Length: 141
Image (cartoon, rainbow, N blue to C red; front, side, top):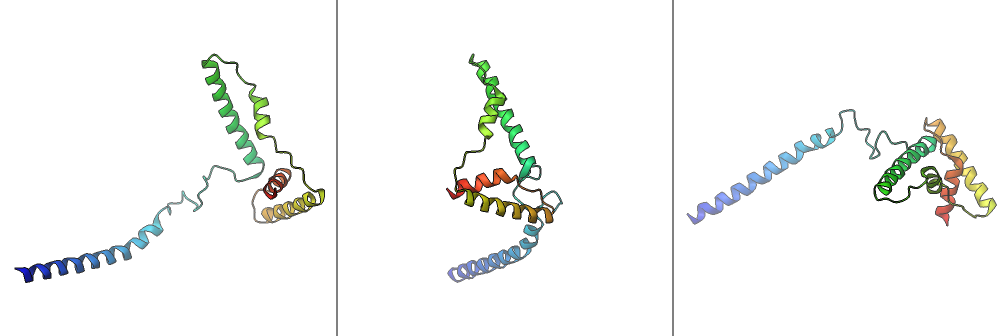
């Protein structure tokens, strides 16, 4: 009986290993088919979300306005004074003031303009030059 137990265990382990290898080999095709239904372009970004430029700014402003209006509705329910949505929105989206060397700012602006030319050639929407210059100068510190 002891001899048969070892043979059964060994046989089950080998059979499980073969099934695992077969499953691994056949699952490669299944993983490649995930998202291949035409609805997914392969990026992690939602398709409806603009990536940059004026469309991005408009979407950002609209979403910020919706949040501010919801905040005002909550403030009114609590009996507080509502905020001026447009003034608060302007304060939130106002570009930070960047004090940088004018030569550095001009060089960054030239780089952004060159990037925009490449983006247009690729069929992409150009970036907002001043906002991109301010962002890059802020990143540079």
